[in-house]
Amino acid sequence: MSKCAPGVLTGEAIDERTITQITIAVQDGDITETKTALFVAINVGFKKENSKLNGNMTDIPICSPPCQNTGTCVGPNTCDCTAGHSGDRCQGMKAEDFKPLIEKGNATIAKYSYTKNTFEYQFMADSTNRSDVDLIWTNSDEFNVMNFDIDASIDVKYNFDHIPPVPRYIRNMKFGIVDANVLVIHYKLGQSGEYEVNNERFTCPQPRDLDPIADKVLECRLDNGTNVFQVDSGDRYVLNYTVTTGGYRELVNTDNGQITATEIYDGVSSHQIMEYRFDYDKPIHCQELHTCSSGDVPLQLEKDITK
Image (cartoon, rainbow, N blue to C red; front, top):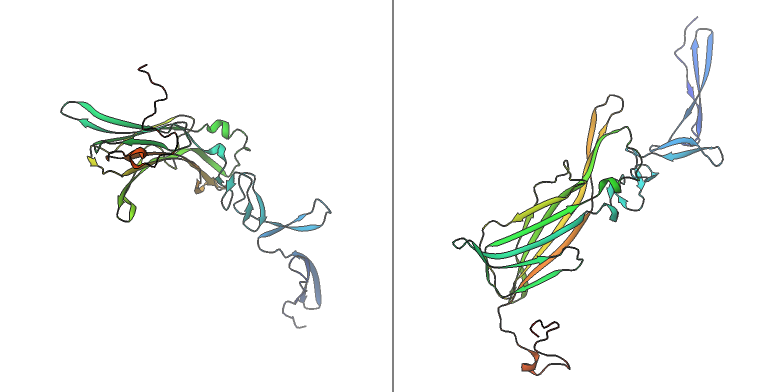
């Protein structure tokens, strides 16, 4: 008897998502064995599960890594995020609850005499507990001190009290304040209008993505050194205070305990704005130009303490 080569695979896939029957015929001399195997052909990015509604097999999309913060996997590697979260895996936190609280935000510009060890003059802007811009006018034209104070915090224990337990594939995680800075922009008036002369950012050294500050107050004091800066009439200094939350998490392989990645959270920011305006020109009242409307007076004292 001659031996035949191993036999034939037969079958037809009616649909990628249906069960396909494949017959394997194995010929060995006069003996023929037929085996039937059932295979499930699954679309890439889906898995088969029994429907809770009718018990039939249905396609369930796969998101790997899974959606975070109670997000829902609605397609292959596509997450539908709950309110307050964003990002491809809903890892970003956009809820107001995760915004840092700027407990103090102020600035001081001054002229300091190092020979007399005293301030000749100083002007403080303070946006603490304010949502609008704190605007300060001055007619002084020379300064050598610019200081910035930032106190900020976030109550991580309170904000994270409602989240589910940390899953096994996360070894370490930390959330808090990761950045605090002041952007100082200097504007001047020119023939074509106002233009930006310079901008400089002063950054607090303490917080970082991998070392966020949580459950305590960030206290940051910044200055421009001893640089003398002069300003012209019409100049503006705009100070934008920004404090940002964030942090990290370490992902591990649950089979061997090895760290596979360190992911950085996308946090949210709080802002406060202060502005200094410089005016050295003699004021002209509308009475001099005969343009006053009814009730305009050159000087109005709401609370005259000299009476």
